[in-house]
Image (tube, rainbow, N blue to C red; front, side, top):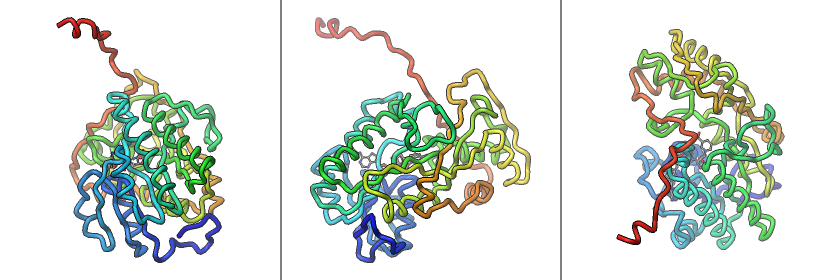
Length: 344
Ligand SMILES: NC(=O)c1ccc[n+]([C@@H]2O[C@H](COP(=O)([O-])OP(=O)(O)OC[C@H]3O[C@@H](n4cnc5c(N)ncnc54)[C@H](O)[C@@H]3O)[C@@H](O)[C@H]2O)c1
């Protein structure tokens, strides 16, 4: 059992740990980290587990759709600690299918929070996103920065946060919330992942110029390696305060021009940028103030240069090219005439 006062520096030996979304990019890394700590882990996910996750010692799969409360309750039975990562992670998908996004991220999270209360789970860690802040007003951003999301994805993640925090206040749900900045590392799906690090590497490793939308100097980001993110999530489980929110980032500001230079250094060949500044929609600084996380005794251990080198090695020459596009606005459909349909 994990308690907020725990200073033992480890998850407790007999904890039953659940990772929702453990078949996905971040989740499969988290399951791997927890398996190294000899934990018994149940992955709650409606998708198949990747073979390397299914083969880990101590891992079992409970297939469930978290939009269904009965399935959620059944899948979380026996859990001491729950890491809730399942959901839609794509802003573009949320623009194209906002109701789908809301069902997964808001309703699914509400179901997980309620089930944790009903089952007496000792600690719930929710992985939210820096997208909840919306357009940054200051940089670096602390956790008290206003939350005004401009994408449905930001609104659905924020709804999840607000629901869990209200359950903490009204019913004592032992929840800690982490807001991740831009994650990168091996295992991202190039057809869905919009993070710049693996996208830049994929173009460059194919010996092609890197397409970039926006101002390459004003567009700055905070990149965190997925293994550091998993370390931060375990720290939240062990030492995070109930009801508190923590930024999960490196705290280091990197412009897209800097990133391209770092890609060149990591691969021994200068990177070419094909910059399109016709849209400046997200040409802002998105950088975390990580002092609250640091006060828990955690700081990221993988510098960008090292993370890039190991990711380049993992991708190998000529990896699959990224096809994920950043969509901020949907084409407006013609107004539907429901009366016509009724008349047919
Ligand atoms: N990847 C990032 O850059 C990033 C950044 C900030 C926050 N996050 C958050 O981290 C979490 C994981 O992101 P990811 O990149 O690993 O995404 P991912 O798409 O790789 O994984 C999500 C997992 O959730 C599962 N899932 C989706 N809907 C489900 C449902 N209804 N029931 C059960 N399982 C369901 C999927 O099968 C998948 O395995 C998300 O909540 C996302 O909002 C990700």
